[in-house]
Length: 310
Ligand code: HEM
Image (cartoon, rainbow, N blue to C red; front, side, top):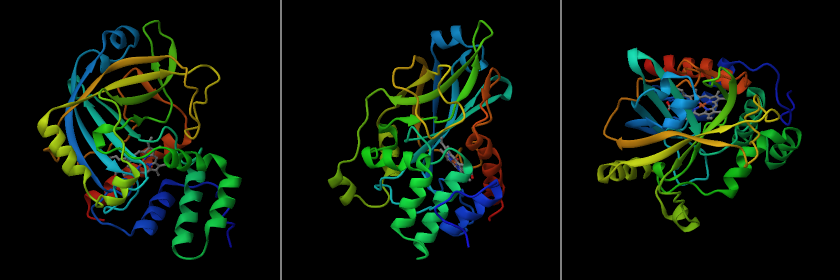
């Protein structure tokens, strides 16, 4: 009999996918995480500053990208007006078939410092759903694993966007890049809509149906393109690079590395794509964040399953 208020040890990507399937049902053909979503596409234009400062082909020229917006979680029928995390994923198409991929969330922090802490949280939620645990179990879990409460706390304070293209997105993890001097700098990225954020009011959250985001996106991009500024926030020595549950201080240097313009929602191009965020352009390196590391294996299992109708 496990103590549900403690995080388990040594969780694998297979354990993760199994738990997602327990929570949501097998959902054949769907992504096991971020099951509900919609494709988009557009253009990335790097800034002069990014090109001058970083040594990566990502910043050598404008590039087309394939994108997908999504609801967090493995439920393909998720309620889009709920206070839950959403995601965006982009695959930049670089010269000679090279790719750079990012996949971030509407929360600046993740629900756990390690895969084990995240797993433990989902395990409590599953137990609550099946009547084997209650709110006090969850409280106990958060008391023992305060890092796992960070994302939920943020979501209580920040309403969801009225549209997929009306909120910020955060890369959450730390990556490294080579600068022109040959030094390695650490960074985390954010995407910020040039028109600012438009969030749902409490009234709208109550009145909206479960599904409205894909339709709003099609209408928005049908009318005109939406442009985001892409920032890299440069970390200092003391900023954590392996803990995605901890935000960095607000005053860190922000470099605008480019603009990301979404101009097409009439595409299915994202469906056969595995947006593994460890697929990066040369000159950019993932950190040893254990959550980031596990994402490659978990996405690969999900990808294989969904493409084979499981
Ligand atoms: C151990 C932690 C995590 C696990 C096990 C996990 C698992 C998954 C899985 C299985 C998928 C579906 C992949 C596919 O079928 O293509 C997925 C999608 C996604 N995840 Fe995660 N994830 C984790 C952490 C994160 C974090 C930290 C972020 C953001 C910083 C994130 C953002 C996303 C996004 C945006 C998608 C949708 C990608 C798409 O549209 O194809 N995930 N996740």
